[in-house]
Image (cartoon, rainbow over all chains, first blue to last red; front, side, top):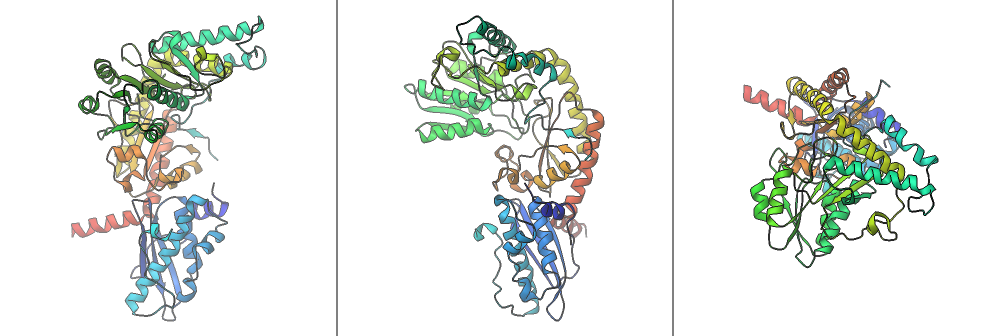
Length: 140
Length: 397
């Protein structure tokens, strides 16, 4: 049911953990639906994401998409990180089963939530960034 | 891959080699259609007759009260739709519970669309209905009560004899979905005053694709499948002779071994439950301690999600199940867990282990050792667990 890439990122997830004193942290999803993702970014003065970590409560796909999403944003500027869409995460994982597409939407939203937190804290503007929704249902 | 440990016997069981041996001649040697007029068909006919007697004797019914079907789901569908239709003049009300199998719940939903009214009784935290509530739910126009003998997820055994007594006294028909109970716990349609009972072959080490419906003599039987005179004209379709032979052989063995098997399984079950409760923190036990199927273990592990747990167990060669949202493609957790009052976030972390008499203590020990490691790992990734720990630290300060 899952691709090899998904299984790899589920069994050996990259970037699991927390960042002490992060530049931005965002949590999306809800326990009722069975998925919660939290992402921590460390962003330097040039607005480059130097480090990204995550914690996720959810199914195999939720953990794998979190892992892949943090991999994809690491080293990118906040503007480029904003371009990491759910489609990009899915493609990087060689696809997801149709019922798991919402996990990739959640991953995209978690990136936005962490960037939003950073923008709020630093009082900076990121072109194109909207206030994230917590409940993924609203995205579908 | 390590040696496989199969702990999903509530989903299906291994066909016993000795059962298969009894079935074998009816595939290749005695292949005749039992409805044939020639001598050659007689062996097939006789063996179906004999199987009917064997099945009937296991539940204390008469052979002519046993109707072979394609499985438990068909039996459930047939029982409810038949009663609804045949007794529609009496009323349009049916009583069931919130934790039935979907074969019953979805049939009830279908009947609701046809204008029937269904009462879904709540259950307590063990998963049992309240008998007083049942009695109060019975109305003049109630046709039937359909309550499962044992629950497929949390293994709770319902007070079947008491329900049968109420139904008989109130003049209401009583159907029980005994798919998980048949061959595992003693069932007597006479003592328990059961009017209809659904069961299947593959949950008792018999073949898949075969089941039966017991219908008490005197009940108006309406055809479910049309197109042939089989099963006294009530269930058309060429007899699945090897399947019928296999189910009867499995039922005979199950009956013979029940006491020994159930003692062994429940001891191993309780040992595993004890170890989990002692060694894994935040494990929420599900179901009943006394009224429980001998082979069912069910827990919800807080702060983690069931599907990721199952995949990690699978990577260790352990076959288990959860009833979690993700596996079924819906975001809602199990209707059974919600009905026993589990909050959504806890219900998501469910795990069902159903053992067999071949499961060993060494296997259970290995499973629990792996389980401990996997749960610890998933919790280390869980934002819910992180929040919980931070709150604990705060309140400790």
